[in-house]
Amino acid sequence: MLTIGDFARASRLSARALRRYDELGLLPPARVDPFTGYRYYAVEQLERARLISWLRRIGMPLAEVGRVCALYASDASGAARAIRGYWARVESETAARRDLAASLMDRLKGPTDVTDEMTGETSDETADGVSDGTADGVTDGVTDGTADGVTDGVTDGTADGVSAARAGARGGAVTGTTGRPAFVLRTAVRLDRGLVRAVQQDAAHAGPHLLAVADGYGPEGERAALAAVGALEAVPPPAPSARAGDVLNDLEDAVRTADGAVSGLAESGTTLTAAVWTGGRLALAHVGDSRAYLLRDGAFVRLTRDHTVVQALVDAGELDPAEAADRPDRALLLKALDGGDVPPDPELGVHETRPGDRYLLCTDGLSAVAAADDIRRALAAGVGPDEAAEALVALARELGGPDNVACVVADVVPA
Image (cartoon, rainbow, N blue to C red):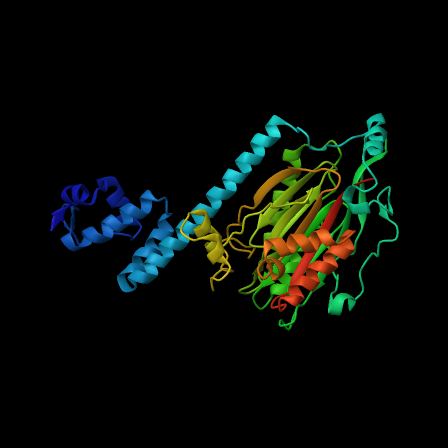
């Protein structure tokens, strides 16, 4: 038997930490003297003590430390998987914070050659300088916040059963101090059940100021996705003078509200990727493995990082990106809206926009089956958002349509 002092030196844990771990039931002493209260530890307890020490060094919360230690006693491989899963979450959260820091640095530097809100007399000057071919001619039909000629609510059966049940394709104008619009979003949304799934568990929304897609899972996945998107629809349109930080705060609050809306749905949850349009910027919030992309001047950029174990392994350099698509656990989520006790922190960012930008928000029914180059070609193929959305759904179906698909396409066009 070792005294608490000897055990502390051998395990590299302080006596204070040992007393704390005793109180929590993590590492009770082998014997406590009934008269003096002295704690004595068995040499065999050193292995557990060192495991606790190492887990604390990597920042694992005490509650998880207890679960890993209990698992280690009966299943060492299971304990190793639990540690790997914890570290994958740490890597994912660190990557999200790094992206937010980069976004903040860009915001503090201010816009360079990107387009911001332009109002008053300068609006006419700028509009005159933009050629009719910008954004492939999608400016036709967009006037003062309406989208004349664009169908509001695509009917069931379009594109072999594609439905846009959550929202139609609409344009929305941002009005400046003179009351004249600067730029608008022209949007299209498509939902497709795919060729394998019996039910539709994706949801989407495309409006003048809000874009969103959600991918539900579990027995109540459809309700979860619809509840999450419905909660986001309550986000108020930002004023043209709104600060980016205020918009992000509102968007983050809405994501937390969406997580609460999912609570009570047994073993179910949803991903959520949403963007709020301010007229010159797109504020983005993201949880899960749905995605947001930007097509600008032929360049195709992914704006979100998947919150999955596989993506965390790629970020940590433990997995080649080319191998990720073939992993059977590629859809194992590290973050999702599931109504748990602690809402997940969404990945947040602000992106400056330009006329001619085309944005895509989609669920993994598209991104998990189609290569990035194929998505880029389909996205660029359409003259307007409707044609592009149709092409994306057709692409997923050509590749077998193994999952539901939700996609929102939005073009930034002069009003």
